[in-house]
Structures are given as structure tokens and as C-alpha cells.
Image 1: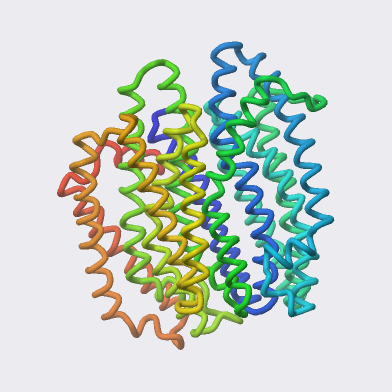
Image 2: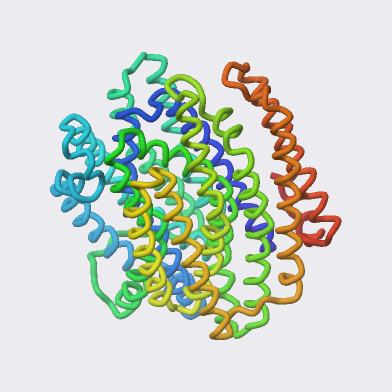
Length: 522
């Protein structure tokens, strides 16, 4: 399978997950709005998600994949299986200890880290503790799933690991649908959702475990033993865990600051979901596929292939995230109204969420480029430098979030995350360029500016069209009319952008053709 085909496989599955995520968030917005129970649920869910990024996705995509790939090349599948069992024993034992400790300390964690602003509201505080306690074991499932996903990616099996997140959204949509049917109040809905998260984690783990067995890797539990290879994994994973979770770390800081204002946490979450769709499809797909491909090229001593892979990944990220960012900037009110404004989610909340999303849009290319640049360090088993850059970005985010929130409220928190994201990208790119590990080739230097120019022209045309169609998106307009208007704007955006980028040579026609053919086959 080609590099583009691999991007399409992971990106397509991720797109399905994010699309269902939209459906889930739309139902939650209608059921909970940005009221107290919405704040409580999102605050509680953010915490296990933070640890999922720290212990799972960041650490294992960065540290485990290169070591597992090396085991396959040096000791074959049997050697890789033995290494995986050693890692499984240590990881499961560690996660069990962490989970027990966190469950016992949950009241303190909510009071001082998760949502300090809830401390003066006994009902919100106790509910957050209860929901976070139910959902925290989700971490075990997700961390073990990340390990097995790394195994599958190294064995060129991408689909199961990419499709597994879909089941979280499927389960939560089912819970929401049942709650609406049964007439559940917001408190009962939030409780049911927390148990749905835990159940979905078990299903997701089962999906990747089945594919691991199909790949010939029948893992058995071994008592934890710290071998030299495990020490090497830990040395790589700890910095990578911090680095991979930078967005979540920034969000948990923003959440702690925002918890002092009613509705702020849920408003940030709704805006976050909107820009996560293109970020997930492009950034996650690029990062997941790039790491094993780069590791393989570097281990074979093929630096020209590694450079080509890096440049094409950056090109792919820019090709899809730059127009997405400009699109979100210019029609965020229309998108928010169509997707969210119903039930408990009113026009005032639409204005707030769309304003936050406009700010987040400026950071979309940065968040995706981070995932395209970090693997260049990880493939060389260098996880400490990206961690240092992450810490710098986190400090900047913390300072800006605290100082901007009194002035710009929720938009200040979003702006802090955006500035932090671009700082991280600049530090990563500058270091790779200085060390000679990243050289922008002629194609990227030519296509990059053409992509940006085409996206700007698209944004201008779409904004003008949206202004002329404003009556289509009036709050009193029928949903089908609003949806039709949004589809027209999106169709116009796609026509203008792809027409310009193809006409000017801003994209490889063959690459776009392979993506289209791949989509038809899927």
C-alpha cells in the first residue's frame, strides 16, 4: 500500500469517528446545552483523556513503535512478540497502580486540578468526582489499545486501530438516544454517559486485540520485569508522553481556569470538537503513518527517502488543513448554528462557540504540523528535545490563559492554546532545519504558497456568499434550509479551492487522483 493509501486508510477511519463524534456532540448540545451538567461531564471526561494522551497515544506511538519495528527486523516476529509481552506486563501493572491511586485521590484532584472553580458548588463538585471516578479506568483500556495499535501499525495493519475510536461515539450516541427516549434529566444523562465511556473503552480494546491475534500475535501476561529493553522504552516514553499530550495538557490548564465561569468548559468543548475533525483526519493520520515509515527508511540508511516522506507529509497536512482553517474562520457562525443550535443550545451559545472556534482555526495548521514534525525526532529515538519544546509551549499557554481569561474570557483560553501550538511548531521545525534533518524540497516550496493563496481566495468567496445568504441561517429558519445553505457554502468552498489549487499546480494531480480513487474503493 502506498503512503497516500495508508493516509487514506487511517484518515478515512478517523473521519468516520469524528463524523460520529459530531453527531454525538450535536445530541449532547441539544440535551445538555452549556449548563451545569455539561460542564461537569466534560470536566470529568477531560481528565482520563489527559492521561490517555500522556500514557497511551503520545508515549507508545513515539517510543514503542520504533523499538517494536527494530525487534521485528533483528529478531523476527517471535522476538517482537516476546518484547510485546514484557511491555504488556509492565504497562498493565503500572496502569493498575495509577488507576487505584487516582481513584482514591479523586476529590483532591477535582478540587485542585480538574475544576478548582467547582469547589464552591457542592453539587457540581460531588458529581464531577463521581463521574471522573467511573471514567478513569477508561485509561487502562486506551493505553493497552495504544500499545496494540502500535504493534498493528508496525505490521502494516492500520484499519482496526483507526476504526476502534468509532465505537466510543457509537456507544455514547446509543446512550443519548436511550436517555432522550426515556426522558432522562441532565443529571441521569451525565451518569449514563460516564458508564458508556467505560463500556466503550472495553469494546475498543477488544477490537484491536482481535486484530492482533489475527496478525499472529497471541499475547500472554508476564509478571513485570525491568529488562534493558524496558528501560530503553521508559527512557523514550516518559518525554514522549509529555510531548504527545501537549494539546491535552494545555486544555486541562484552560479547563481549570475556565471552571470559574458557568458554561465556559462546555463552550470550549463544543468548539474543540469542530476543529478536531480536520485535525484528526489529517494530523493523526499523518503522524500515525509517518512514524513507522520514517523509522523504516532511517534504519535502512535511506536518508533521501526519509526526506521525501517528510516533505510529502508536510505538503499533505498543508493541503487539507490550511483551507479547513480559513473555512472555519469565515463561516464559524453558520457551521455552529447548523450543527448545534437546537434544544438547550440557543443563539447566545452559538455566538460564543463560533467566536471560540474562529480563534481555534488559526491554530489548526499548527496542531496538525506538530504531529507531522515530531515523528522526525521519534524515528531517531530522540524524545527529550520535543519534550523540552512542549514544556516551553505549556508555560506560554499557562501564562497567557491566566492573563487573557479576565479580558477575553473563553476566547482568551483558545488564543493561549493557539500561540502555544505555533511556538511548538517553530521550535520543532527550526531544530530539524538546523540539524539538517529537514530540508524543504522544491516541490514543497512551490506548492506551499499556492495552497495558501488558493485557500485565501476560497475564504473570500465563501464569506461573500455567506453574507448574501444570511437569511438562510436566521435562527428562525428551518433546519433543512440551514443545512442546505451550509452544504451550498461547503460545495462552493471545495469548488473554488480545488479548482485553484489544481489550476496553479499547488497540489500533485497524481496524489489527488489516488486519494479520490481510494475513496471510491472504500
